[in-house]
Image (tube, rainbow, N blue to C red):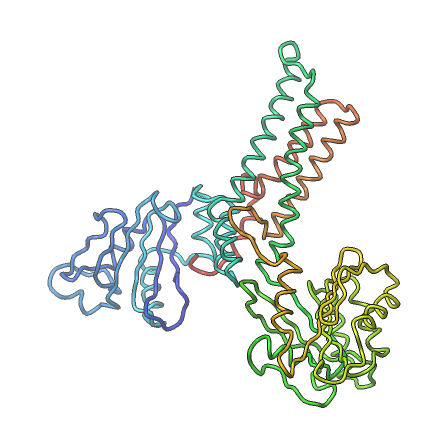
Length: 493
C-alpha cells in the first residue's frame, strides 16, 4: 500500500510566468495547510471542497494565525488547487501550488513542502501511482510520456488516442476472447460428462484466425507507428560536391551546412530534424563518398556508409553534368536494400546522365531484376524486390524539384496521406515485441489443432498469449519492469 506523500516541481525549471509544485498522498492536505495562508492569515485547506482554487500565500514555517507574525515568513503569493481522492490524477489527495515562475521561488516552495513532511518524488512517480491505483493501465501510462515527447502532430494524435484507451480496449477484448476459450477447455477437461469437445476444434480455429488477424494488423502498424513517433531517418549520400549540403540547407530553411565549390568540404555528419507535412524528417548530411587517402575524409566516408545502413530512406544525389564513375557504383552497391530517392541534380547544366543510365547502372551493380513502373525524363519509379527507388530531376540552384521530393517522401511511406483517426497504431517497441509473442503462441495453438494434440496443450499456449497481452496493459507485470518504464519519465509527472 502507498502511504507516503510525494512532491515535485511539475513545470520546467526555468524562468516563466507560472511554476507548479505538486503534492500527492495521504498527508497532502495537512502538509499544504501548514504552509498556506489566506490573505487574512487563516489556514483553510483542510476543510475546503475538492476541485477548488484558493488565493493566498506560501510561508516558510508554521506560525500562529493571530497577528501578523506569519507575514514575515511569506515566500510567494500563490493559487492552491485542491483535488481530493479519488478525483485526481493519482487518485490520491493532491494539491498543486501555482506560484510565480522564478527558479529560486519554485525551489524554495519545494524545499518548504519537503521540510513539512513530503519526500521528493522519483521521475514518473505521479503517473506510476495513477497506474498502481488503477486510474490508468500501463499502455495509457506509456502514452503520457509519448505525449510529452511528441515531435509532430501525428505522433501527438496517436499518443492521445492511446491515452484515451485505443490500445487498451483492443488488448482487453482479445484477452476476453482468449480467456473464454481457456475456461471452456478447462471446464471440459474437468467435467467431460456435461461439456463436450465435439466440433470445438472448428469453432476455436475460427476464433483463432480472427484474433491472429487482429494481432497481425497491429504488428504491421508498428513500422508506420515508429516513423510517426520518431520520424523518417533520412540519409543524404553522394559523391563530393553534388549538392548534398545545399539540399540540407534548402530543406531546413537556413544555412546550416557549409557550401563551397571545394570537393570534400563536409567531413563529418550533420543532423537536423524538420517537420514535413506533419511528420518528422530526421535528415543526416554525410561526407561525400569517394576513394580517398585523406585520413579524416576517409573516416567521414565510413560514417556515411554506416548511417546509410541504418536509414529508413536514402537520398542519393547524382550530378547529371558529369559522367557516372566508380564512386557512383560504390554508392549504388549499398542502397539496393533501402527505399531510395535519386536526385539527378544540376539539371540546369548540360546533362550527360539520364534516368536510363542510372537504371542500367543499378541493374549492373545489384544484379537484381528491376521492375520499371514508370519511366520519364523527370520522375521515374522502379522496384527492387520490395524496395522502391524513385529518380527525380532537380536543380537546387534554381530550387526546382524540392516540392516533388517532399511529395514523393510522403507517398513512399504513407501513400500520400497519413490517416490517424480511431485506428489503433502501435508506436511502442515493447508492445510490438509482446504482440509478436502473442502471435507465436496463437500459431502454436493452430499447429496443435492441426496435429490433433490433446486439449491441455491448447490451454498452455492460449494462456501464454493471454499473459503476453496482459503485459502490454500491466495486468501482469514485474516491479523491475514497471520501475524501468516510469524511470524514463521527467520529474514531476
